[in-house]
Length: 86
Image (cartoon, rainbow, N blue to C red; front, side, top):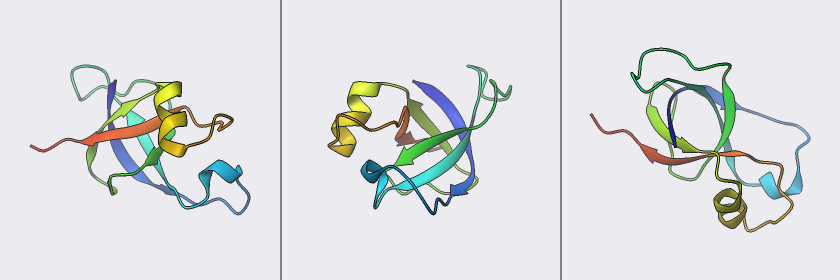
């Protein structure tokens, strides 16, 4: 699990069939301090309705993401599992 800041959304004209109907977020991961960026932004599948400017909890649990998308062959690694409420 990792905290991240939603930068925006991603739009794809061609994507894996498992992503049809799913919102893709561009998220900047942060270190545990919540202020220091941790690497490059990542794409995360969102089922909770998070938007730009929000802080989210993400997971890279492949099995959990495959279960969420109901597809064993999805290339997705990151998914949003919570929106941080301040």
